[in-house]
Length: 538
Image (cartoon, rainbow, N blue to C red; front, top):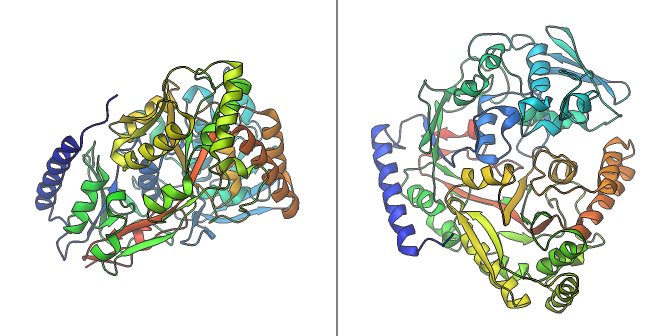
């Protein structure tokens, strides 16, 4: 697919910007005095079902609509939300007691069954939910998740009464409760199961916001939320509502921010990284976040299977000048990656064995490429797919140039118009090139970066990587009760990844962004996403 010309991009920006201006005028826009916060997003990939949403544009909407057993504060601390308590004597059997009085926005109560039924729905293979592997630690998951399930519900979940249920894990995992603030573990009302597809278009949650009306989700345009007056937790909205404006171009979003036609933007296009702090004096953020940006090269692609593929992935990684790209293209708002997690998460170290595969080492890269050619001579082009609506073209071009200049091969970007289109081909395993990937932490543990992306059958293991030794070590890390032993096993699991490189780590991204003149108290969370409920509209 050809790269869209600069003129075409500019024309699109003008059209979209004019549309947003008209939209703002029709809804009072972001003029002072309105209580609605206008925030950037992209079109979610899937209907808004918690167990079927694996990307950040849909995830941020779900986090506004739902409340889980626990939630995460700005610094990543875990606090109870719907749960009154989560107790265990052995780290394997957990008893969950819900706080009384919680309801969904349709007025029905949030009960123990609201969680248990939702989790069983998410785990059952015939429901084909993208986030099913989050339930892997629970006893009985394997029978439910099998291609031909031998059970419909997990044996490890049991409802005691309306406010109490138990969770039995396959092995003791002391860190398991910390994960329960992620969207896959949200509850569902009983009405969802009558027509889950319809529910995903107009979800009914129990969080700080709710859909504003029946037409709240105008696809590829906006999603309108209003404050939920029945919310009982600590994330009570300090604004009247939240409208996600669904942009197809990050530069357009930034232009609207400068014009106060957008209130919050948690991403700065590369064209503005040198100037955004001057453009938005006192209204910007630049802080570490629990994210990593990578690209994935599936082993099923020609020349990337077996030993040949391992050599070629290492060569490609060694051909990328991460330091130069992060300094020149991102104005040092990115940091060259040294592993598969993030410096913002406890346990990170830059010195793991194998991290030298993330160095820029042209001679080593060419030598490894030549070794791979001895197995099977290279043919074709190396293409890296990305979504044009996310501001990725510049870095993809820079990475491709670095690979091309080092290895002497045809390397280039392969643009997709939207994130949703790219992700659809990725999740359906129909994409025929390498593709942009990455991870924004679901919960504040290194384990989450590794399990979902690289464990066999992981919900976001889009490259289809499978290594039994990695799986064994990672599972052992989750079951280790000694924190030192657990960290050693996590490190060992990463050493395996640094050798195999199922994805190529690029850099860790700072949370960068800005806000309009009409909002205050804008805070960016540990995961790089704004805490929308705290934002106050002037």
